[in-house]
Image (cartoon, rainbow, N blue to C red; front, side, top):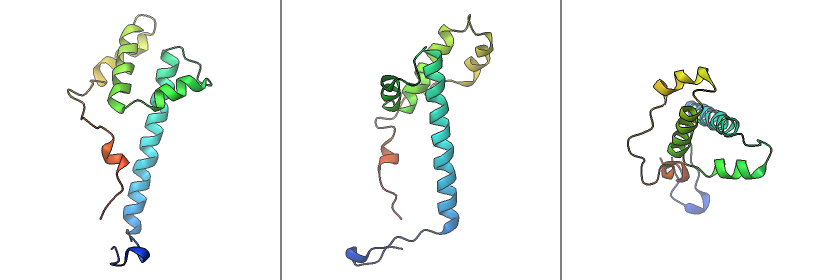
Length: 109
């Protein structure tokens, strides 16, 4: 609940919701970190080089999936275990205009 006085505004969110939001954020962060590491390894990037981290951090999720799929398809002959990926990583048909806009906006209740 938000109080009427903006100077003393307090947002109260039930602990169950905060716990669920926290779990989602942690899982999403782990997924992004694993995807960044995977793309860096498949592209033969140095994971300790800041340039590879900068490039990967500024990519939207659909672009990461497209790059991962392209790398997996290109390296399929060299890495036979990647054949399983081709069935499970269909890129989205159309990316939203602002794919991360919902994450950049403050939560409102």
